Image 1: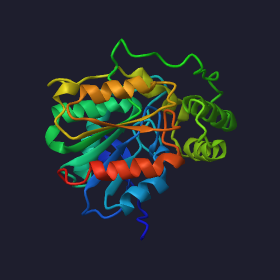
Image 2: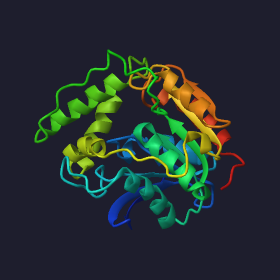
Image 3: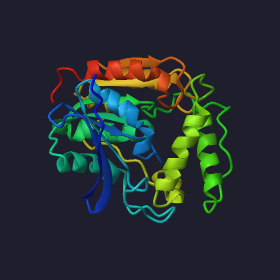
Length: 284
């Protein structure tokens, strides 16, 4: 099988900011846009995972949110944008790449972007996949009492920042047998070195008030929907994924055995196979 390597990173002017975008695979294939979780640059969608999806006949797009990676950065604690702005960046990227309608894969906090786009911009969404996210209903279980984060690091000390990111990833893995500390540390080192300001990366998405769609809620999503959730997720325990499946008409749930609030390498085969099936035959 031919590996679909990256076409290289590009900086696009979108919605008045710079966004760094990288693509994999055949541009004529159905597009899959990967929307990372809060504080996560494109690197958290591993390049090899992107290649595996591209190898299965998809044009894969990953990008740096504002305040992550090489995209526009604001002072820590002072994001000059709304959650809806972050959401509309997805459509701006689709426009920049000439993608009318895309399969969206939205992780964690940015499941909210999938909801907004699926309800308010259904013509731009071929399908939705929600990874490690939630409806946010009040009756769902809280994060695990074992989920303890380390003290905030000295941002002038890159080594301390890397260790903070590794500790956070370990906590969010929820005791998963698949947690690979060496791989996460290598990723964190690249992520910290690549970011314009990592203090902004870790703070600014959480300083933005979440928005919701104006035309309805989860029950109004018409796009085919797949919910993906790890059974070790300590931040949003599995009932969050089950509730999301139940909230979206016709949604299916893939439970990733042994995964926490992430997509560790040993579950990639199951995830990619499910995503390919889910995006087969839907609008391009």
